[in-house]
Length: 287
Image 1 (cartoon, rainbow, N blue to C red):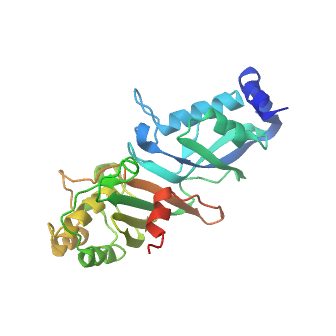
Image 2 (cartoon, rainbow, N blue to C red):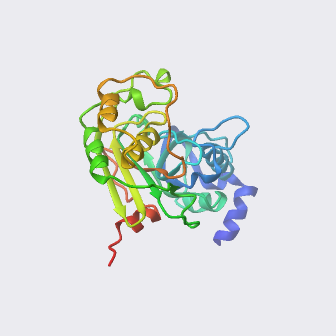
Image 3 (cartoon, rainbow, N blue to C red):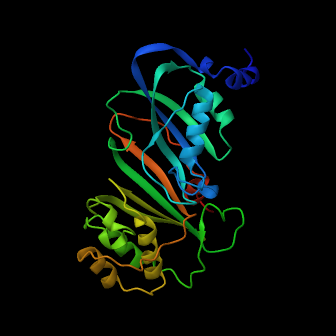
């Protein structure tokens, strides 16, 4: 059957994309990416559109049965994910071309890369070992990156001071001071394995690798790092927030659109990641 005709079949006989029923449930993990510009974050919410809702409705349409998914984490409104994973469970084995048909149903700003069968005791959230977030800023107006990087008109950029602050992050592990809603977390302990900065002309990229991240944590860190870059904040004040964690009711956050969930690592899953275009731009060699 030609693929276009097969897509039509989705709506006429969605069960076509499921094989014969199995005696046990089957769990799948989807590797995908999304542009968060038009969404109020990952999570399904009342009266606003989240990525989860669109994905669940699309999978349900293809399979012909109501399907819910569990995501590897949450992202806020307008935040992107260049690598994201979800899991769902079905009674039937899905067909090999499920990802092709699903991508034709999904909007252009959400796309599936891989669909993998996993063990029933596998948990897409708890089995993730490391997560990497990237935050891009540009310092010259550019309409072509405006939705994917945050514009800041910086008067200066003290790279040495920012580097010193980034070097502090793996040393400390309580990020209570950089959490927007610390009371909603059982604890605010986070292990940061790596924190770095890449610079290419007027484009900057902060990268943070940790075992977990708190609500607003990366954007709060970036806001303070930019304050340090412009010499508006002393390094001793930044360090005190790490040494003596406390709740800051007026916590300041960097803009959302520069933030990406860029990588999620699992112990037993090796999969090729598709990088966001800005990553190639900032790693390009300039002559």
